[in-house]
Length: 490
Image 1 (spheres, one colour):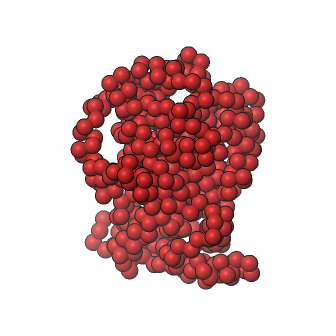
Image 2: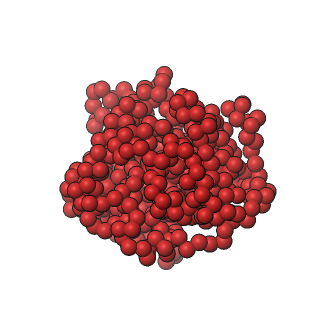
Image 3: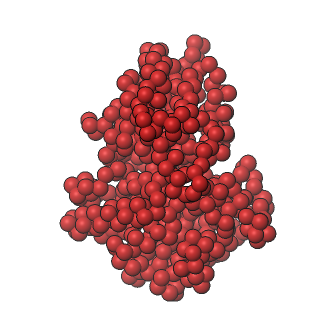
């Protein structure tokens, strides 16, 4: 981290962005894509390493299974793209590689059967945690070698910007902190030391990808040269390059995608490792405001049940948001804490006994119409290495899954805080196989709805709340806005 601090200082947002070439004010990319014939562009298949990658989309599906019938039906639906939730970030690297190979092969077979062209996006964390370069390597083994990998972690809604190939995290609304100098880079499993994406690629590939192979589409290319300049650079890169896309505002990504699409008309094929913003941009999905309780049709009548918030994420932002939620809602929120050390002790014997009291208590509160927060204790317990840390996380996730699976009363809504938590709750507790991405509950916070009759609590409003997204007050404000009015409120 010390080396990164010397090379990449913290920057002031306003002064830094003012020093850049002015951004393109608008593009017509979304209209071009939406008006183009459905078969003009390949179907975008987004392999999402946790469910938070749906955070800029609406009106498309996320699949949690990849059997032939489900995939073929999705390809035949006429969709421009869809997500498959892999949850691979929760797995050790060898298992993640095997899973991507399995899913990739299933996708390729379904596309062949339905005569559809497709391209892969490996959607990963906008703070650079995840199985890189492993996942793109495996996807390329399945789909064939791409002309280049596109690395685009930009995610404006979460304050993740790439400038001069350095990836930044916005803090406090005014400071651009190089990503390697944030708590995300200290991740027990996916930590890293370099904020410059050229150095990051070399570091994460253990030198297998040399710095010379990492190319760049700069903000000057995008803002001054436009899509033609972007396409020209892309066409000039050697096969096997890794290309960093710089971006600070949405139109930067739009112009870059226009250039990419132009390059593909010349026969180039790309494989993408990106944050969420690339996906919605490439699909031509325009951003809409967060959906209100009224728009969602939430029942806020006096006799309606309580809502449920489940929190398993340990990133500092989540802990800060939980503190704000608890302080802000006071006695309007019932809090139940699952002690992680007790869960680890109970894991080998009887996890069900360890969570049963919490299940019963939460059920009573929800039936009485009271909102409930079920959270794990905040003391972070890590293992001696990456694998044991993942195993501890798995025990915690298993306890939360079991809690929701055993819960009997249907809550008014479910908010799941954290990537692994929300993934496991959707798939293992609520038995979702295909869900519609309805939009966002707050900027960068996805909303899903699964109407399959085999799903537990079918049709419930389900919030996938990333651990590292939002301000201190975002979770509190969401829960407050969805609360039942108290006397005197309308």
